[in-house]
Amino acid sequence: MNLRRILALVKKDLKKTHREPAVLFLLLIFPVVLTFVFGLAFGGIGGGGTTSFDVGLLNLDATSPQADWSDAFTDNLTGSGVFVVQDFDDNVTGQEALLQGNLDAFIVIPEGFGDSVESYYGAPLDPSSWDNTTIGLYVDSGSLMAVSAVPPLVQQVLMKTIFGSEVMTVGLPIEIGSPALVASSTFTQWDFMAPGIFAFAAIFLTMIVAQSMTYERDEGLLKRLRTTPVSSADYMISQTLTYMIIAVIQVALVLASAFVIGYRPATGPAGIAFTFVIAIAFSLVAVGFGLIAASISKSAEVSTGVSFMFIMPQMFFGTFMPLGGATEIIGNFMPSKYITDALTTLFLRGAPVTTPVIWYDLAIVSVVGVLLVALGIYLFEKFGYR
Amino acid sequence: MSKSAISITNLTKRFDDITAVDNLSLEIGWGELFGILGPNGAGKSTVINILSTLLDPTDGSATIDDHDVVFDPDGVRDIIGVCPQKPAFYPHLTGEENITLMGEMHLVPKDVLKERVMTMVEKIGMEEHIKRRAKDYSGGMIRRVSTLMALVSDPKIALLDEPTVAMDPKSRRAVWDVIRELKELGKAIILTTHYMEEAAELCDRVAIIDEGKLVALGSPAELIEQNQVKNLEEVFLKLTGKKLREEV
Image (cartoon, rainbow over all chains, first blue to last red):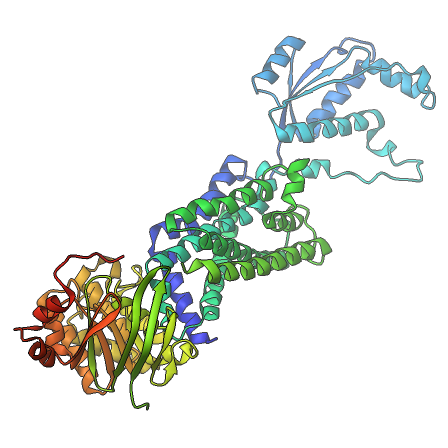
């Protein structure tokens, strides 16, 4: 193994990155474009500001003697800063507005709402004497954010209306910690997706590695190198090192692009440093898959298709696609899931870098990466030089 | 330094049921420019590939300066320079970068390498184009760069597989001059070519092989005299026949 040879080969490959337009696009421009497009499409601009929900309100208890309670509920909805309330005179118009996507939710305060609250205060310890009513809450099922955020927020406003802010804490030995519902509502969909972008960008390294290796093989370049004193180890290390460097550049570009569109991850310099480390580990995964794809591909063109066999599952099961059920089980086998998971913990949950789960994620990505590179080298040595 | 630069003994290479090289034995000395001639598919490139450590022989042996091509490939790679039949080069690199890269693989000291590259480039008349990307080169220019990629390490032994194909006469002469200089420096050179006048002009001795077998060995003049013909091309046609063949 010789450092000078390795560095000369790395230099050769890095030159390709910026001299070949297709490679330049896929490795460096694509992550930037991806970040901007997803950021803009999913609310990255202004990210970190307060998100509001357009809510329609039909108050059927407005004329009752206990209308003060429904008025208070309405005031609390408006005063929460989370809802932009629009009054409706009938249920049909409100439902239509919801169906047309003009509202995130439609709330119907039922007749007897005020009586219901008063009945509670009349006998707070005797549920059988309460006048029960139900608030109608219809949420835009086409909005993931509305479905997940609106019901608990409305619940919180209702609690405040009935008990007030202070009543909750007076005379009780146990306090309920204020859930971060309002804080959560400041997230946009982009905030949830951003951690996945890092893995998403790096996944495509697999295709470049496979194309590069098969091209060098087909054009006789590998044979030419094998007539020189350069060893297989020199060559493979140079490939791995090249794509580690590219992964670092990709992370820097994605971070910078995300920052430009207003993304502010809930982590400090240590978390950012960790992002680079796990991206480097993930580049091993990409190189490993690239070598495997090159080993079983007869030409550079075929390697592109074969690479997608490794890229697509990682993309759909391991980045920012919603998981659940069987999908989640499959996702556990995708190395990209662990980089996304670690970055979600850091960027979204604001966990410190000492959190064990992110080190567990890093360990998995690293071990899988090393094993894949080893398998890739073995397969390429055995079949790749055909 | 070994007595023979290259020693080939009973070398045989079979691919399934095809015998590409059949019991070939040759001794090539230092300072000798040795030509291997033969029709398409005769086994010329297979011999070069075995000597380059890219292929293992099925039978027999070959040594380069006493380094066995099978048992000591690293020793062989340290001292050879190979110009492959297909001029492998990195299209995104400039001609200069392609040549320099090969020097780096042989760990030629950086200052020596830079000077050597420029000297060689001048000799083959590529000064104006050497900083252009190789993907923009003509076929002849690529061949010239490919030849320099083989020679930039100042190898003790050069294996040149049809280095002058597709070159105009002027470029070919420039490459001939470079090859002659190597010979004068005492290097051993194996040259395969389809150009009989090239072999006659450059080679001290030539081997004509056909279907993997050695059919003639000697200096161009000796072969012409032995076969009582006017030139090497006629020797070639006489010994290998006039039937057209394609490489498999």
